[in-house]
Length: 234
Image 1: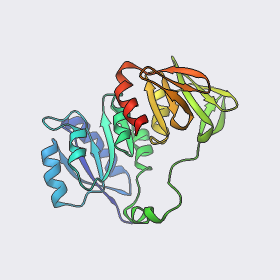
Image 2: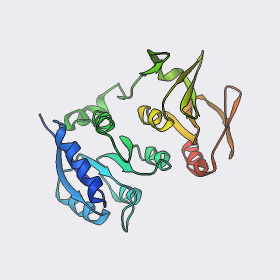
Image 3: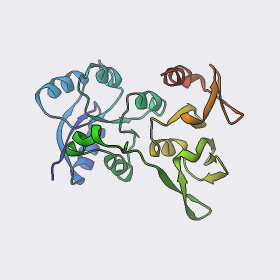
């Protein structure tokens, strides 16, 4: 089995050690190198084959997203950060996943299972399947309930619960919004507010302060406004 060569770009030694340990526990991953800043990472990327970068955003000197801008050939990227608010920008770069520290091993495994093998990557241009999940299961009323992703209009955070608004009904689940966001394809869903995650295909109209979904006006948070407008214009 060909293992994915993994580079960690992280300036915090403890966080890097956790990732190294996690990588070594996954049979199809291989820990290649740890770099403490973007300059070291750029140098290593010129010398070695890297399949996956576990990338911190708040690096000394050149920041994580600035590093991505310099790469002509971008490996698969998994963001590792202590900050939720950069998730939208991360998904704009089509990252594989976005992990918020401290990262539990179970959550790390979810991200690792989204990675594509080198052989599979070569077949992607010829594949009719975009590789995105079509449904997910959530726990509601002590049952596992299947939700078809195309049926989701938006998801609203209500303290410890989420209201998943579907085309035909609503479902209430006990789960943080950031966890739900990480389970959904970044190309199809957009975080517009700390309390709202919206299906891009469901947005009917929008302006600087709100979007409209089936006649319902949802606010765009101030911290999300610029990134939301960039994604919707694109």
